[in-house]
Image (cartoon, rainbow, N blue to C red):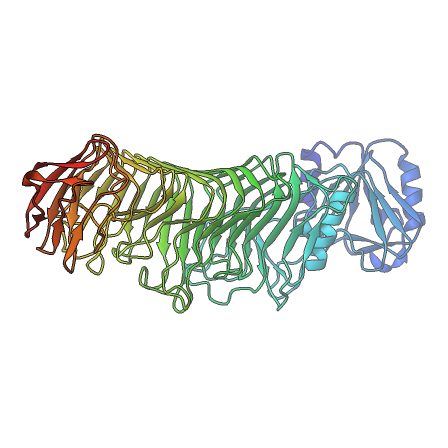
Length: 635
């Protein structure tokens, strides 16, 4: 509690302590909570007139009953020793004065039904002025609501919550522009570093499932302009690492915030229904925020960005850390021009919960730059759900345009991670590194793209898993160029699978380097072109002709790329033609066993001596297509 001398010094230092100084108790006012001070105050103001003056309210509750009680702009009011004003029902205190009252003191007791109005000469409103208390178990919902309501109605529009833990059981709603500011500190409990106790903390208590803080307009403009929320901790669980005893609610819901709103240095910890959800938050920025142990698998994202009717745009997010979250991020409903720069997104879940991917749907012109992605799901990567039996990918992209530049993806589990599953939209991934890619399932590639993807100049680390090394699956119109694929296992045995499966059209793999062990580069059903792709390792580097095919399709073999095909029929098979060739195409066929015969069909294939070629294990034959027929060049 500030002393009288401290408050007086503060008053003079602020430049307001000029003119006469009046102890109101010496001028007929009483702070005994029963005396009506209206007349005494009116006489004192009349005595001072329009001169500068400082009034000291020394102690107690000063009650007023007059319809209007003026505190004019020529006075400075100093509250000491817990002194506060208490307007009765029907009484309005009109504040246009300067106020000095300390950060932790009750100044306005509105419990009797009285009101406040005016425009006091202060730059911030403090929650304790309206009854907030940093006491364990005390519900500050009403006090915080009064604080925001009066910061707005008194035209101050900035709430500063000093250091302390403020318990909140209900929902605090802000419906007009008002900054919300606290103090951020990294102080931790000395006996349990997981517990954070420093700075300004709003802690969830009780059993309510409703949001803790809601910023949503109820005004003539139907938007909230330019609000800043900064240097605060929202605490649902006091356990940063484990998320023990999460609060079953959401910390922050922000709707229709426009014209440079900002979130700065926020810590949000331990909320099951999500940390931060913004809906139509645009022309704004986030700086150095952390969301930890928030969200719920496949139900509530830790951070949720949504929009309506193409109106959510120009959102710049710097240094965002989403850590230890089951469902880290969801962006949908026409999110546009959103950049994530220099942050970290970490998917984490503990048995038996399965992590949900970052979900991007209906997003336009969204960019991730210099981000770190970390996969730490339970039993990663062999942890399966009950439906698909496949570990979820880190990113699920359904529609829109998304780019990744200079990012780094990793997992502490050497067996690997599935990074992307695209079912729609357009993606550019450029100059990024993806470590420990999962490679051991024929139906779940580390990178699964439906189409219109540019995968450029990336480093990819993929080692065999369960005897397989599958890496990427592509649909239509994909360009995969300038990438390097490494094998951290240094050539562990591979018995099946393929590095690439291209089941669409128009996909090209150009000027990539492939190292390590692999069964084959491209699946036989693929329609991709291999242009200038090089490999170094113990894999066969051959495209496999489909088992049992008598007229296999070779249209996927580019004139400037791969022409080496593998024959591995498991039963006797006679090939009578090769379909979809182009004039001048050359193919080199190598047999792994003696089950294949290439027929001298006359109309389609002309072999030397007009004799069928019965291929033995290890034998090769070279054929050239002249536009009408295949001719043997070498055997």
